[in-house]
Length: 222
Image (tube, rainbow, N blue to C red; front, side, top):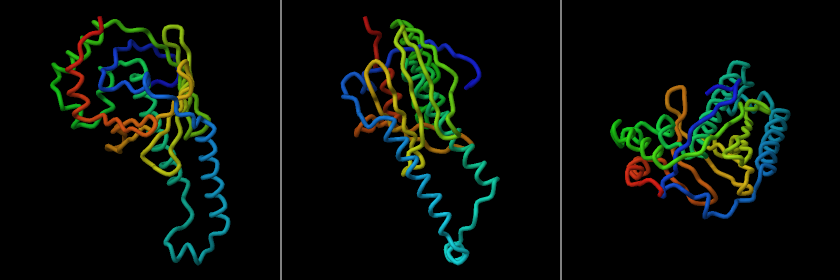
């Protein structure tokens, strides 16, 4: 995903099996809550480092992190967030054909290559808008913001790690539908990440084999 130039994607319709946004009320926790939680975590980490004694480090087997360790963790966090950004960009415009690379191997292989082509063709036949996304803007290595414009409607998506669940990235979207909050559940695969599920509010939507097979049951909207 390029971060130094605007991108224009051609979206496709979202299937009935994955359309929580129109019917779910906005979850109004907001970006303030996400940022506040991250700040609290940072304060706790700094305070803990200040009072940690050499004896405690010996007892618990933990020493100061090297610069290399910190750099590796930062890179993995950034890669996890970039994966979440990429998925939400294609889902936000309902471009189901481009969802495939973000899914687990099992989900990708749930239907054949020909059937994936059928999904893409069905989406194109339905008529789709054009979306433009800004390059990712990083506040630091763990907070990313993307602006978008879809058929004249503008909004902003902000992504940050969940402070208590290391495989979760929380997205806060501020757009025409108000404030929406999603938890994006990921799993490490090699040096990258794959998306397992989305949780708007309390209901979890797995992006698994069942979801993929359901794409074949969708017919174009008249």
